[in-house]
Image (tube, rainbow, N blue to C red):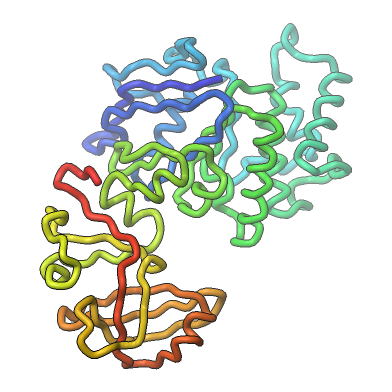
Length: 347
């Protein structure tokens, strides 16, 4: 079930939340809406769900070619999972999952035996078998979020919508649960759109990433495409650490100032090679100001000479040991891969 939204606009008073956004979610794909707070991603998700209405003059929203713009949220057949679970505390796990089926009009309500059978199948699907009699307070955060997901799936939605589904969880549970969601999606292949501000999360589990900023979409692509070929300086800096080097200081050493029409060169810390200083070296020269060697990767902060700009460099622990570097040592830097942008943000 594909999702298409055309020229979606939404304002709240003088604030523009969405400024004419087009969204296309291919059938059966797991698509991430990624962006900083206030970029419009949750507003767009809620408009797709029917929980918010776009401004007059916006284009249609369709599910697999069927216009649902004026269809109420309860009839769009979407499953919605909130960040804070929104489970009923006075209900058991079974009752929470079955709720959407039990409140249907009598003519549409499945028999009690069918509801029970579906709940048990969903408990198995989300790996919560045997916990149907527990209450939400007796579950971990990760288990509660899986109950919320099972409840959303119980009504057999055409589209699954997730709003920061792991935001209320600690780092380890969050990582475990997002890997589980990726495997889960590969089993059910239900068209899924989820909101996140976590770059690592989106790049790890999504089939496609929609990057939003200031009420518009900056770039759409696979995780590898948006990371390796960012369409704008914003995307480059939002997806991981990046050094922004000034062209004037680089011109004598880099040799391609004509490519830097915006006056800047973008390079990620792991794309910088470092070596002990050799007299006569004509490339980038810097001095080490800090060394952080905890974890599998070592991080250096170096000060460029003579520009005095600070540059972050990442290398393996083994490489750091082999180089025998110390604070205030002078080093030579080599940019293995870098990006520059034209004024229109074409790479």
